[in-house]
Length: 422
Image (cartoon, rainbow, N blue to C red; front, side, top):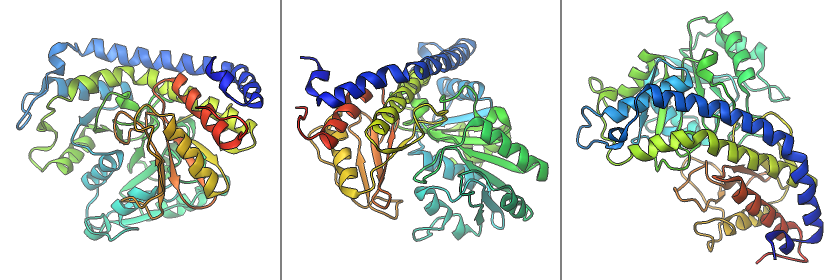
């Protein structure tokens, strides 16, 4: 008996229709993967990656040739002058926060032009939480331009706020926990052009989490000065166990390095221990892994929409990150679906996820993530805050086959009660 035979007959017919429906999109995704893989392969070859590159260092991390090579590879592939790829970054939020603390000084202003940033960054900025250690405590001002009702940047409001001459203008590529579309590179290009017409020399920062390799162009290649992300998301390829990166203009990356360590040392020290092999190999695999995750998101969107759920993006919409939202309308369905995803995970499949408070978030969060690397968003997971409209954020998947099995089985158990998989 095949896995398909275990499903409700009506769901079986849906799966067969969806398989045919999504194939043209899969072909487009495969083309993107090939383009991105060629860029990564070229960078590895040009920077003479060898077995010695994976050795790592301890102590102060002096003369770490592999670390310097990986920095150069990230810079080349992402279109920056320099990069800093470090296992010392504990998350994407940490990398982004480090960039802000490197760039901003008391009296400066940070302006987000893509609405209010997501929950964990609100505490870094100091507009949520106890503000201890935040930008606000250091006298750094913050403002943001609300988006239009259609989810697009509001040029009138942004122009008004740019008149205050902020030091850093920030763009959040992915939606976070907001109910809006993520911003494509084409849209980010237009935003940067608009800002530059008003403030030609302002520093433009892009939160690139979830976006790397989802398109064939990155924000630095369309005019951003600096960007940051997490290695347990896209660029780690499922192998990096921890870490993050900051890439962009040489002087700005240098300032971020001083914030990560201390002035006078910056990015020149930091032991890589035994992390380099995973970080190199993960980056090499990242274009393929991201492609697998996006194929999984496309399939999930098509199947879930077919059973009547509200999903964003739609299955045939352009993709600029890994995120797929699913609106359940009620907490019970949301938590039931999350539990089913956990059940069809390779790790901790026996665990039942329950909503709970998490550091950095204002609402209780439910998270299903049976991943090999704790919290790795490039592996299949779903999470979301327990608040209306009870939206789960699906991301990741090391293989399309795992995503298909898990999503289809979760749909069967959540919405088709006559026949359940075992």
